[in-house]
Image (cartoon, rainbow, N blue to C red; front, side):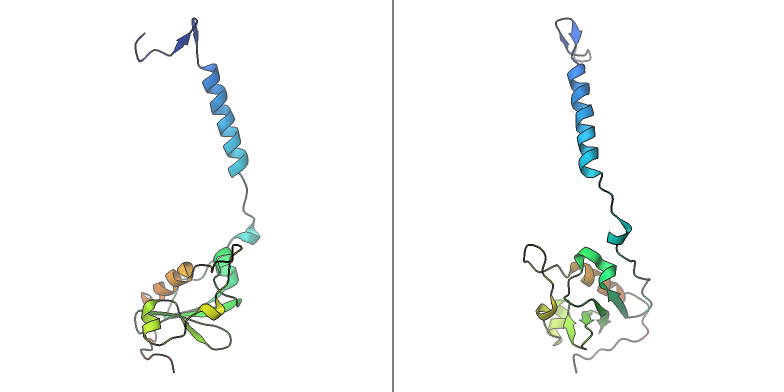
Length: 145
């Protein structure tokens, strides 16, 4: 038998088992991965940034919201300092450059996930760094006051 011929067992093709395995795999994948995400679970999109600061709410990041407050203002200061201001007026550093400029460590307002670990600041930091590239209306350069 050449390599291009189907496998034969006792004069019959061995495709029945293969077809059954494929159908079972497809059905299993469809059942496991077919969960629909409701509109209530989808993040509310942020508008495109127009300056160096932007208000953000828990609804904008949903499951990756990293703070214990429900809203904040993300801001790029000094061209590369990513900070977030919470409702009480405290400004926290989101990156090393903001920390080096003297902004507070965000640990007091960091949310924890189900496993007890802090939720990553990455998605918020990424959006804040986009503000550093947005058209500059006003870019304060001083550290915290």
